[in-house]
Image (cartoon, rainbow, N blue to C red; front, side, top):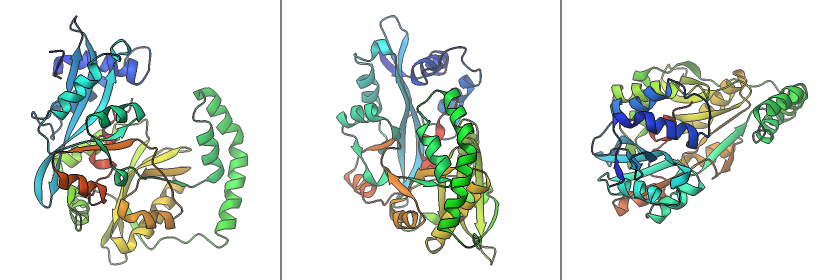
Length: 363
């Protein structure tokens, strides 16, 4: 069979395939990419032998296709279920008109997980997934963006399709103008002094995040399940992704010293920050968002973007966020009809922390 399970001895070939045809990079492959793939697919505490990754071999035995599968532990009404996420889906150009893609996806669907997901499909892979009865889930596909410096953000987004040197030159040349425009814009929109939120930040510890995640499950039918080992591994892996910037993890306490909110986001000066997760007590959620925005401004981030909790769209809107469905598609293949309904009505507590998006190798 040309499709088989991914094993450790395949890492060199798979990394080469990923580097050349998924990242479209040339030159020597970074040495750190090999241990990243080994750690992700063979050494992490959530590895499940019943949900392996797959490779596709041509007639000569060369690997020409790869579908990475990561497993997550979740709870449905308090009962454990097995969830498989597809990611790092890459096919050699010479094999794209053949059976490699449907073969790999077919092997993934033939597994025995309770729920199959991907949260970062592009238009091509989304089409392939839909042919195998995957459903696009609107409640998981609402992305938000919050400009923090309107002029700088506009220049940044306009230059994203240019080559790196030209884009950098344009951003440097327009920076003085952008600073003036953004200063005037903030003055016009907020003529008085900027009010500080009544929340007190501190570094978000592993124990505090575990406590926050456990408390946030109330009222949802489906949620991720972490222990200290699995959560620590996920956070360490996310921090490897220097391409997205430094990971800031902040807990927020009120005047009684009670933790009422938290956020995690990738911070890059002069760029758009990627929010991994933001949560907290519903009455204080807008204040938590405002603190997040203030923190990002202080880090000289020009905008923030993330995936919105369907139940909190009003709060994001009230705090000046704009919405799109073009940030990477989330598609699902549940084995049970009730799971699909739960996902559709926004009754699943799923964030970027809990899927495949945050496990990008980041090279």
